[in-house]
Image (cartoon, rainbow, N blue to C red):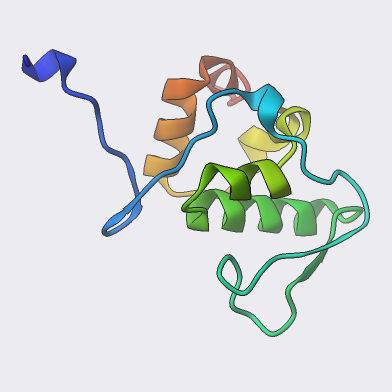
Length: 113
């Protein structure tokens, strides 16, 4: 396999590959209300996020994108249309952003130049 054909491995953090959904349309997580993340995704004692507060929604998405190890976690907590809307405002590691934008180029178009 040539170097150009070798898949790129993006890491959310050391030894943790970024998990990316195959399509944005498969993400049907909640868009309103209080959402409690499991301890595995957010180890803080207060694990509820009020999605009606924009900063809380961003915070939850950032944690799920960084900490997910299975696609089902993405499907459960993220919404594809919401992810597209907030993409440019997310504070996520470069490798997470690169992995998602490589798989879903329309997210890249959401980030201002």
